[in-house]
Image 1 (cartoon, rainbow, N blue to C red):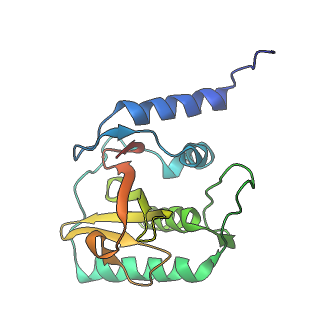
Image 2 (cartoon, one colour):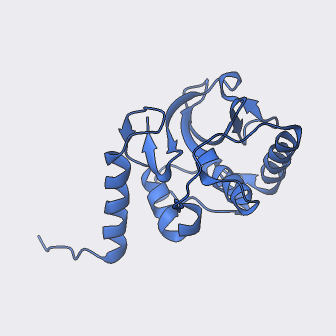
Length: 183
């Protein structure tokens, strides 16, 4: 069997996976591997995965203005992307920012990208792998606020507190470093 050459992008992906598995959540969750599609996404969109030296890990102060901004981003992205279910066996999963058609992953990273562009800190905008009430895998954006975690979801037009979504958390990014995931 021929040996495969280890490329720089592959080494980056391995390092990112190792970092994800080797650090615990700021809230005490168990460390877990980041989704492989997330690692690929970070290689293609490093600015969306960067942890700043002054990474803010505190929740956002809830206000009516914040609530309205989150609702606007949720509604705009939900309207912009045409839902498309990924066909099994269609190749490696890819997460894309603002595609014409996409699945939950594309909605979630697009919402996070827009909020980062508006100046919100990465530590308050966490991608989360959940299971829905129908026990289906799903990706949402969780925004940490002083009134609790709010969910921006392509399956819902309203921004809701996490407990009201009916979702069950599987894993999510950690506030201290968006490249690190915890269960």
